[in-house]
Structure formats: structure tokens, C-alpha cells
Image (tube, rainbow, N blue to C red; front, side, top):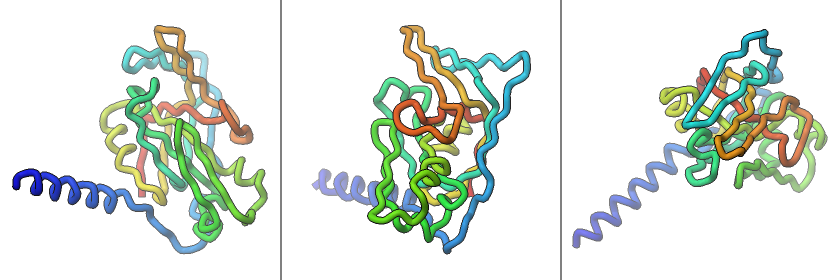
Amino acid sequence: MRWRWLLLFALAWVAWDRWEARPIVHPPGVLVSTDPVQTDLGPSPPRLSKAGYQILPLQSFSLDARVLSKERYRFDEAADIAPVDLALGWGRMSDQAILDAFDISQSGRFYFWHVDRFPIPRREIETHSANMHMIPANDEVKRRLLRIRAGQIVSLSGYLVEVRGANGWRWRSSLTRDDTGAGACEVVWVETVQAR
């Protein structure tokens, strides 16, 4: 009899978790009209580290964007420093009327999209959306990142970085929004984040 209560509790927890994480749908219209902003660092960039990794800031970075998808990672090599990836969109890639044409997913640290018919030019999709690996600067930032839902508008700031592990492993951020494929993701040290 006890196993039935445990099963019921587990099912209720899964249902609540899915309800809490459900995507937010907006009326048509561009929600974020600005592009991400990055600037060169001064002569003395900050020294950062996390979980035994050396974090090298490459450029300062900030953006407002719509969350197209969120993926939690627990078991890959980077999970201890970057527990979540956000696929983000701005410009017309923040417009519900445009996004309704898309199937969007994430897996293996990549962001995937599919359309049956292009609602905007392919190049605009590629330059106005990106998969970003989020490295929280502290526990509060981590909590905020993990609570984010698809459809929310996020504002974040920090650095685009290169991560170096003691075993020689490296993970370097893209520094441009117009690249695609492997190596095109941003690796972001997140110092502040707000979602609405």
C-alpha cells in the first residue's frame, strides 16, 4: 500500500514540475528590439575561477532576450560549472507570431530549430538567436537561472569567457552573433540575471 502513496506523490511532483516550467506565450509583436552588447575589457580583466576551472574573461557582455528554450545539464563534462543552457532570441526572434512557426529544442549543448516554411530569412534567424552556456557567478544567480521558463524575457550581464580545466580541457565562447554550428555558442559568466 505504501508504494501506491509513493507513486502518487511522484506523479504529483512531476505534474507540478511540468506545470511550473510550462512555456509562457505572448501576444504577437517584437518583445526585445535591442541586440546583445559586448565590449573589450580594460588592461586588467578580472580573475575568475569556479569548481577548479580557470575562467578567462574575453569581453564584457550584456543582453535582453526572449528565452526560446532552456535545457538543464547534470552529467556532461561542463555540468558542474554550467548547469543550464538558454536558447535566446531578440529582434523578430522574440515575436510570438514568428516563433509560432518554429519547433525549437536543445540537446548535447546545441540548440535546434525547424520550420516548414521560413517566416523570416534564414540568416536573420541565425543572427538573432543563439545557444548560450550559462556559468553562474554565485549560488543566487544559479537559482535564478534554474527557475527561468521558456517565453520569459531575461536581462543578464557578465562576460564572454574561455574555460580551462586542469586536464587541458577548454571551452571558448564565440565572440560574434553571425557564426553557426559547433563553436558558435556563447559561454557566459553570468553576474546578474533577471527574468520577467
